[in-house]
Image 1: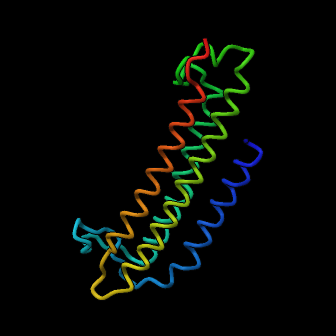
Image 2: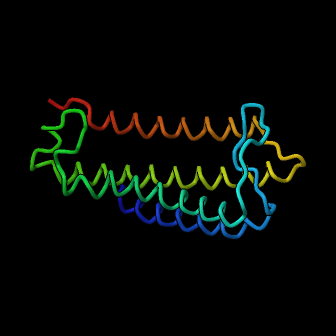
Length: 165
């Protein structure tokens, strides 16, 4: 699974960064970047500030997730918190367990990067109207899709590490 997860993660990071960089010019000089419950803007950013912010989020958060889930556990075993920890971290199963967690980290990082890129596209849509307005149904659909996929990743992780004794 990891042989696909790592290159996919890199691909999603690159595509997200390029997408944000290439499409940011579709936004006005002052960007409505935060919206209230009714879809009306209540926070604004400069064009350059927005670009830096979105790139930092689209790259930084997924990288932080991967580092914390895939790299740190290899150096700090006591920080691993999984069901049936002693069973899964037994020396006979440890490497397979760490590879499985690492693959999950790459899938989760990919999901987060794609979600942030999608939010960027949604903000382009919101700023295309005057006055800017966040399309609520589209935002809810995007958020529900993200949360459902996140839930699937979490359940698959928990099912993998269920009691094996």
